[in-house]
Amino acid sequence: MRESLPARLFHGFRARPENWLVVVLLAVCIGLSIASPAFLTVSNLIDLVESYSVRAILAMGLFVVLIAGGIDISFAAVASVAQYVAAALAAKLGLAPIVVLPAGLAVGVLLGCLNATLIHYARVTSIIITIATMNTYFAFLMFFTGGHSIYDLPDWWSNRIVLFQTEAPNGDLIRITLPILVMVLAIALTWFLLNRTRAGRQLYAMGGNIESARRIGISIAKMHYLAYGFLGFMAALAGLLQAHRVGESVPNALYGSELDVLSAAVLGGASLAGGVGTVGGVVLGILLLAVIQNGLNLLGISPYCFSIITGAVIVISTSVTVMSARGRRRSRVIGLEVPQHG
Image 1 (cartoon, one colour):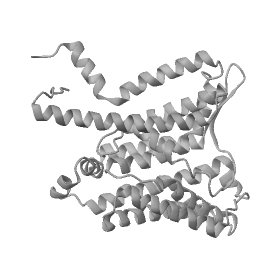
Image 2: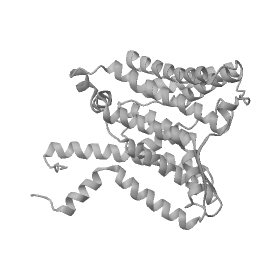
Image 3: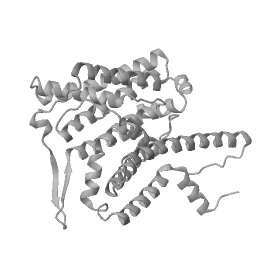
Image 4: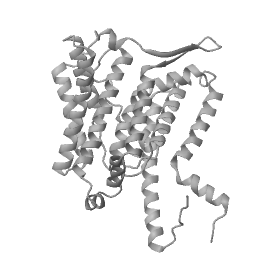
């Protein structure tokens, strides 16, 4: 029997997690704007976006790994190592940015490819490998640095770069800064990789069914190096940007942000089983977590509540994903699955 138009529209709406996320995001924004007049101001929203720019870049890298069917817990440690190496080259040796920035990015890619090598050739689950490398990378960093921060970054790195500035009617300054631009470029690069390149389609295929991908000739090793190398690049980029925002290099500045980034990815519809998710969904996930944290701060609620929320997000999202997959398998078995059109 052919479905009515409202039923088809409802099924189309329900099939995309991003649509539900937009509804939730709007509801949270309306609630916070009523509870706190300071929330719905342009200056506050731009500050909110800039404060989450580093996590958004990390989420883009992690999303590519999730699409490929893997998971990486070591990206914050990779970002810290890459940031500190670049900071040491700039502050201790006085090297120019044309050397420092590529060196920092290269460290991130190198550590990401090391993860890929261990995962592909040791045939061990990616979460086990990356938990081990996370501890190893961070332990080496703390051992060689003694946990000391680098405060004397050169001006070309620590000076705030404002690309656009204007004054709001209420007197607030509205600024578009370098972190926001870099975040937009990182999102665009990830979207292009996954949606406009052959390698992106192969990553989706590998995440959907790795054995099928291998049988149709996709090089699993190359895809592992691409996914984890890309995450290493994004982690290093986020680390360099974090040092620019705060004007110093702190070894443990990003350590512990893994749960926030993973929450944003799964909240945006990325499946921990691989092969499912969109860049737009992850961006919405980041925005929702940023809005919630900003709202809690404005309302004076304990920051521990945010940790409770992010933990609950992972539990609920993972449970819903597993139950949906079981439901689809059961429908296929008894022949009741409703075909989706459009």
